Length: 93
Image (cartoon, rainbow, N blue to C red; front, side, top):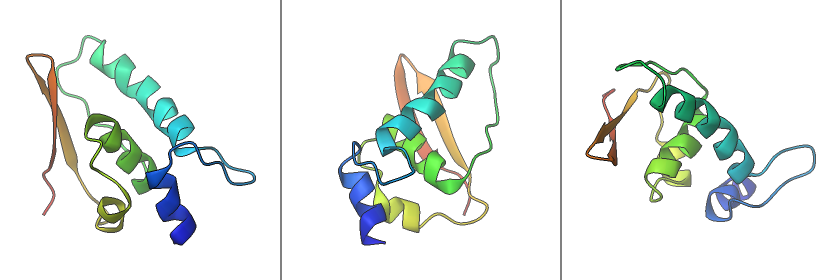
């Protein structure tokens, strides 16, 4: 768990056989950016908790290891955009 915690504090760390949190975040954001720039108003994206937490971190840098630990299964977050500003909010209680 300490090694995982470190990946949220230093997004560039790569453990053997894996990818950095930054690489995973960028991979997830490629899909999110396709959606943002696409024609749809409302989209549902399904992913596992680790990648979801990194995508959420992209929009809100304060999200990290502790927020990942608090995820439930399932969990639902809403990322909304208004006036070029993004807001992240948990909607699953």
